[in-house]
Length: 198
Image: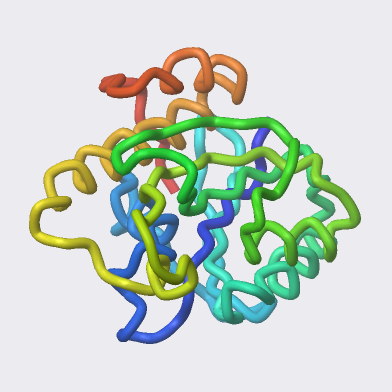
């Protein structure tokens, strides 16, 4: 059961709409996003919401991406949440824009936010929701992930964010394996049940 959803990103208005911040964007698309009351602690902003009678926590680390674990680990330890109960939502350059993929554990694919999270948690066993941002045809990957989406990408981006938010909510109600089965297709739209009251 997922008890903590972590959306990776960089703080600051200059990074708000960049590829590295699609995790934050997906969290903003949750059906109950406007009901979340954020508090600043654990080097981040966190909130909680009642999903099917269970309290689920949400976290946006306010560290830079490559220090995300300095926020995730203290919060997980404080609330006694194991790595296996954490879902990390992040950008994935090895997936085409618009792709949504649930993944359990595995490698870190060079993602600095995942590296920091794994290092501070002491393992790779946390669950992931990978949001495709595509790999640049050339040039610096670090520049690519910090660049905004183009106008021609807006439709695919919005579709991905909608599916990602639905996937998160479905996962919290029905479990990770069920969500992976339902949402790991290329363009699976779902009208899964929404969360309960906060």
